[in-house]
Image (cartoon, rainbow over all chains, first blue to last red; front, side):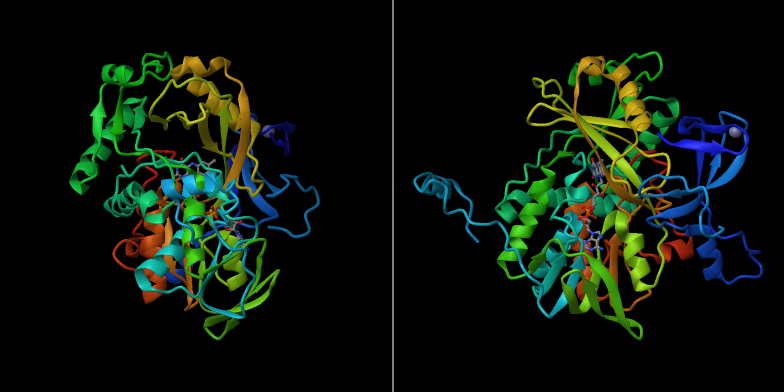
Length: 85
Length: 415
Ligand SMILES: Cc1cc2nc3c(=O)[nH]c(=O)nc-3n(C[C@H](O)[C@H](O)[C@H](O)COP(=O)(O)OP(=O)(O)OC[C@H]3O[C@@H](n4cnc5c(N)ncnc54)[C@H](O)[C@@H]3O)c2cc1C
Ligand SMILES: [Zn+2]
């Protein structure tokens, strides 16, 4: 089980959280992008083997949404990831 | 290829069983192949088989980074059914199920197909309605299923507790010709057949790069050197996003660990497969007597091929209410596989942005049952360069067209 660091509650069990998926691209204005770009936004998320930025929701805690960087192979949560999401 | 038969068995008995030989050759890569298939799981091997059988294309290599069948094909709970909601799914899964019926004879390899029947439980009012809808859909598409009352279910499966406090059983969807098969044997049987006609199976060989020339792929780089090809087909399940990245495109997939466990062996207690989708648990009894139990996927995407403790615990905790008899069984083994999930929980059999690369993936938590049908459809796609009737609905284009083949509403888990 993961020990996830909530910005308010510090380290808590994974079971208190709800996974919000990998952080994808920001929502574009549908009127300004092509169909392909819009579909891309709707269907593509990063799926790397290694570090990935992802959203978590402390649903059974303080209710905060936040972003962590986790390695998808080792499950290690990186404290100082090299690049920003 | 040495034919397996009662006669061969008797003959070998007098020969100390020294004459059986390997089921497939351990090949080293040649310079060039007409078709290279990446991934020696069931789907990759079946694709190679139907390429040879239906289209006479036998200059084929199947490249595998680990050992043959060591991916999800060797890690699944082997449930075979075709009672899907959407017409496109029913077509390919039923084709697959019917190919399974005669696959042992066809391959001269006992894949132990056991059409013992699959029971899908309805444990909420919503699920009961959804299953009835599926049942009507099945009737329209000619897939034989029936709805079963709790009383009848109790007769069929005496160990089931139909009136648990939390998940009472309100009915069931029964597919009498669903069942199980021996997963390894499916991979081994196809491997033996294609190897016998000269296709190369190259194990311990990872694809590490794709060399493109303009809009086409010219060759692949592997840990055993570079190999040229006319056509390339990715059949790598949970690793599909990684292979696509090597080839320069992206896929609408998320990879996540799905796990299963078996109990210690006990005497026969249950002669069919039971799926409890509400609690994400499903169970059958193996020929060795182990209860084979599959659970839900991990809570977050990962490639750890291991599975998380809390999810296996949740599955077992919920199943115990329905099957009190398992409460004191000990767990023998537990394992995980990396499944490739699409948004609509339907697979992808498709052309790709690269002209001569083809794709078979997205089977997620439920592709074992689809191996023969999927191989059939993918072989057609690779041979003609265009999909046939079975594969066409499952193209990547469906995501652009918004034409989802939504199986996720039918059942939260879709094994
Ligand atoms: C626990 C569990 C239970 C399941 N239960 C069921 C069930 O009851 N019924 C059902 O129908 N389905 C079930 N499934 C799903 C089913 O197992 C899969 O959909 C199916 O086996 C996929 O087969 P495949 O051939 O596509 O992939 P795999 O068998 O995973 O084969 C892909 C192969 O590609 C290889 N590969 C990856 N990357 C590379 C590379 N770079 N170079 C070379 N080779 C590479 C891998 O090593 C692997 O052997 C279950 C899955 C799991 C994990
Ligand atoms: Zn918190």
